[in-house]
Length: 171
Length: 318
Image 1 (cartoon, rainbow over the protein chains, first blue to last red):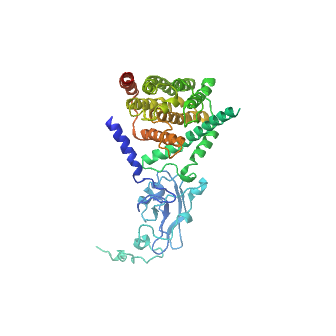
Image 2: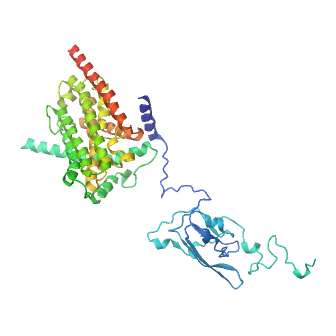
Image 3: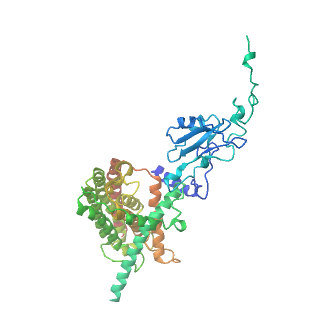
């Protein structure tokens, strides 16, 4: 009997508590920086595409929403000819970001992607590419890789030794 | 002629006011529940979300009104009408203010008890005609609950009748000129209130329509405006019980002068309506057998005791 009256009173007092509701369109919920939202393709510090078209993201994707075709430019630098993410399938699991060896594909704290037409949820490369470097600043895969694709000469990369003339490597 | 016209206008006015209040209660309940659960509730449609009522009604009217092929069609259609008719008829006896009442009949309270007994039919018939296991279970529970709680609902107001010496609602209000009956009849008030909750099958006594067990209980199969009638009927029921508590125990339209009597009546009525909603916000639903044993083993003896003591005291002092 007493407990019933007490719970009535405590419920009544909740009228004067602070509301927990965030009135969304006017007031945005604070999202953590590692929130897994919309997927973007970042660029390296030189402004070139980071993606090397290795297909690891497409392989990691549990719902097969990533489609891409790798190609090479005249210097032999790999890049995706097209890169397509179907966001109506994407489950925002972040496996593609984990799989990416070049920090190219990243998930950002943005979820406001509503569309009236389902076809508009298919994002092409130009929709995905951003101007900046995303979460990982200063990283350029081709500056550290051994290959020469016009970014740097062979053996001039960071933490890279000059190429060894194998003919001098005599026992 | 003039008198007839006036009575007709009063009756129509009360009917419209009641239907407006019952529809508005949908919004009030959602806002108040939200307030007690640290939310905002519907606040987008119109100022403070009050046009939510209109939106809800438009939705309700345009829903498909489906009658299941396995249902008993005529009874299925009749059941939601019964709840509306009986509750609206019960309002006939409520004196909102001097002069603002539909019928000043000398057996007013008995008329209400009769109508609320008839109201049980809507639950039973609705559940039976749906031809659905959940509905039938809900209907059986509803019938048992309403019939048991009606017994001491009637008994608990007998104390008021003894003290006022009349079944007439206006006389009962006038008898509270000196002291409102909830002071001498506190036990009767508590029992009547609990029985009233059970009678309108509101939470915590919403066992006939317990969502977690029976989907929607006796009105599981109803849709469209037929469901709307059950829905509005529930809010009309809350209004009716609140109006009755106000009349029987809290002095009806009697107040402190500076406001018109009908405003006093409405203030008291709305206080009880809000209390109904507060109950919904805070109390869990008892088990079915707990409800039954609480009614028969505690409330019935208490109301009999209340009747006995009141009767004895009134006889002793007069």
